Amino acid sequence: MLGVQVQTLNNMAELRASRFGRPWPRHGLKLLFWFAKDYIVIKNDNQMVANSDPKEGGFGFRLFQNRLQCDNNICKKLLPDDGYTFYEVGNLHHTASKSMPEYVRKGYTHHIDTSNMDRLIISMRPDRIVDKVYVTQHEDLRNFAPLNTYCISRELLMIICGHPLSNFLEQAGYSTHEQNVIMYQGIAPRESGDTKIDMEGLIGDQSSHSFTTSNRSDW
Image (cartoon, rainbow, N blue to C red; front, side, top):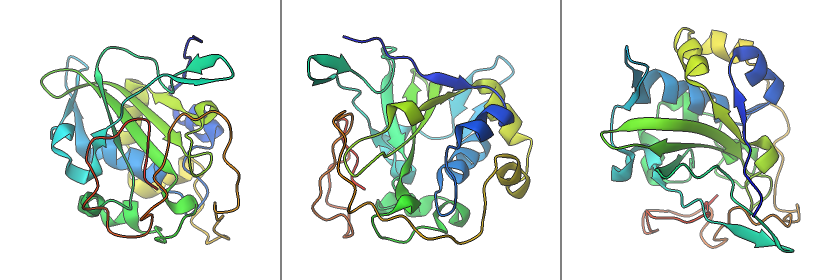
């Protein structure tokens, strides 16, 4: 099995260089801003404490089972396995995501395109302590992109908290100009198989879907 190495982003320059969550209509930078500003509190002892328990499913959080995936005798996981439970959020197709601020959901087209490709994944210790924060994106309809998956440091989260949204997006290189929305329907899936998607009901109501997921993310 190959060891999993995920680059850590420590400052705004590194976040901008990663190109995560942009350009418009992607929502990953807005999702990260919401998480840093509203979902966690960073205590004096540098512990990151969630304001609500993600296992309750608020804001669209659901379990992410970081399962081993093997292809051509090469096995890997998307994230390093630290022994804690992973939760995923950011799928704007889920009914519970409507609890997020309007600025996170504003560019969502309800189609299979870049407006819903970004995700945030956290690992949780007991007592609502957040251990690690990751951001990632779909590389196609089936898979998350390992090379576009990053760990967000506590220092960067604190930096984000010090900015208003508009200033943060500007520093991160986000453009609000409406561009052609890239449709994913014609892109052939890659071979990595890191996360699988149920292709049925992509645009319909997700309220009947199970809250628990494996390395799968309904678009």
